[in-house]
Structures are given as C-alpha cells and as structure tokens.
Length: 130
Image (cartoon, rainbow, N blue to C red; front, side):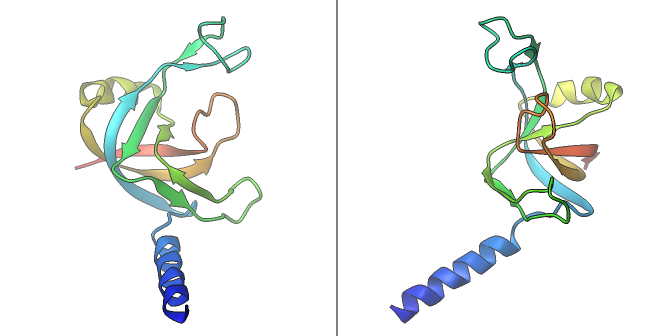
C-alpha cells in the first residue's frame, strides 16, 4: 500500500511539474490545424445558422496542462488536446502553408474569455520558432 501511494505521489508531482504556466512565454510543438467552429449568435451549430469561425489550432503530440495562475481568470486546465492561436492579421497568410504540418511556436498563454475562444486556453503573441 505504501509503495502504491508513493508511486502515485511521484507521478502526480512529475505531472504537475510538466504543466505550463500563464506567466512568461512558453514554447510548444505540434500540428497546425484550422477547423470550422460555430460562432455568433449562439456558438452552438453552424448547420443551425451560427456564423462559421475558422481559428488556427495547435495540436501537441500529448495533451497539455496549465497550472492555476495569479488571477481568478487564469484557471488550471488539464488534458487539453488543442490550443487556439490568437494571431495578428498578417500571421494567417504566413501560417497557411504550414497547415497539417508539425510546427514549433512560442507565445503567452491566456484563459478563454469570450465565445470566440474555442479552447479553454489560448496562445497569444505567437511567434514561429525554427
């Protein structure tokens, strides 16, 4: 029983250590995707009349987690398979040729705040890393 508890505690500690932070820049690697998701007015179904939104997403090889930040809005999140990218206008054209490919990006994490944010955590101030 004690060995099992020690192993569980060690796994939990290492998993928490691997979580990302809302503070500072992070570097992530994954596949760049663009998907169609429902927007206004109800953010529930394009087929039922919601405007289509096509954000760029990063799908890391393994789901990521983010630790609780210093504000109420910076909630801890676990097992996130994708992150939405908040890009500036010119960045979309630069990244289009990389859709479906593995990329390295850096940026700052932020928690979703509006219906236009389609993942719990987003990557802003995005830069491509080589």
